[in-house]
Image 1 (cartoon, each protein chain N blue to C red):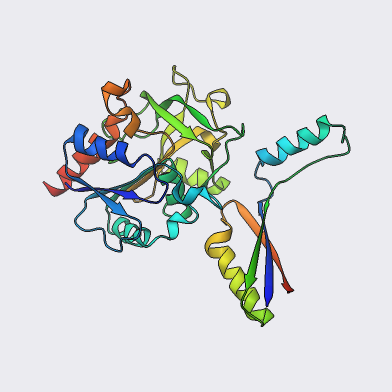
Image 2: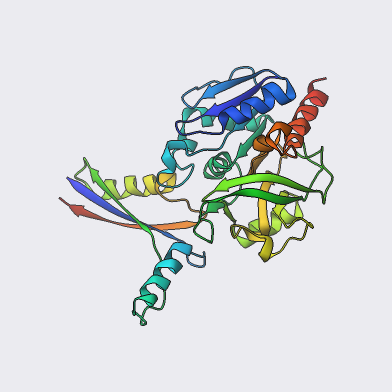
Length: 233
Length: 82
């Protein structure tokens, strides 16, 4: 199982993602550069957080036009697993690989905190290590994490089980009071219709190693690995 | 040469926290007549072009592909001779 971590100028969570695969999963992983036109032999791609191209214009607006993103689109169209975390999520929405968009946090502040999340759908290649309804803690660190999509899009996503994580309190209650950034329906992470592309604002890679104090995020990478192992034998 | 002046705004109905903050700020310094503020972006593009119709088509294309995100933003532009 080969993994790839896609690097843009301004990515700053790539090493944490690399560590999660290399040290936590113990699987081969390589960096991919945004100018690469071919991804090589990879089974899963992580688009890490950061400030690709300085977040100029809009977060992800310039990054999603990089040559590597054309290859990532082809990879995803062929069923490959892609996960975008934080800025990676923003890039995937700009690329229209995921619906909606990430607006500025409603409180106008950069948020950097440990955040409780409710697992909404555990029946996906990215969340199978959890149970639906589990409350987990992942860090968030963003200025534009306020998820927005048109009403009918949200309704479709809800009906299709495309919401993976929602912002909640430690008791698992999901309400406006437990919503840090104004995201519609407290959405923190979503999956596409084909169940192979995920975007999430919280950082599973920063909560994968118990040495760092949090390890709930490990489940995302283990879920992906188990899916790939089951698929490839 | 032509210059395009593109204005990108959040679509109507999408909450603009920056606009709200500016609105509150104006109110706090006494501009009580301010009812609503929306904050957007202006992008100026110098074009090495002379034909206005072709320039308009190009700028539309730029807006659709990169300058605006149609999920949350709308755009308008004017083209001037410079």
